[in-house]
Image (cartoon, rainbow, N blue to C red; front, side):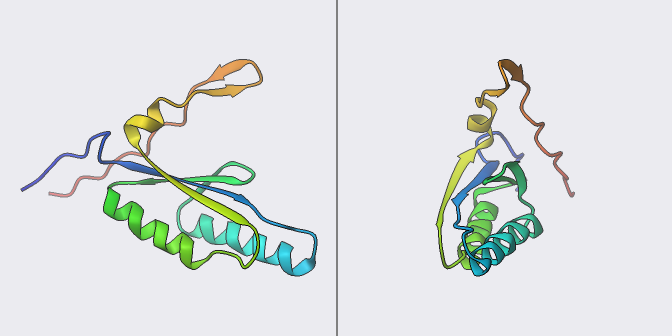
Length: 111
């Protein structure tokens, strides 16, 4: 049975982090963590905030486990999972001007 994706099934993952960069090892670990997030399909929203679109909760769980497997040895990392509907309620500003949210990635349907 085919079920169409909707705004309550599509998920967004946010990864927030505060990683130390005082020493060479810490800077290297932070850089590797950011590069691995990008390899896994995350995009930088702000310097220490990365987002990723997931077609389903199951897909989001897979990516959460990947992030957990690449955590650096130092620093704080938080992962937030929200629905596409909740994501649509986000308000973005550039200075005092309201900025439209980034469009959701297109969905590929296979028959």
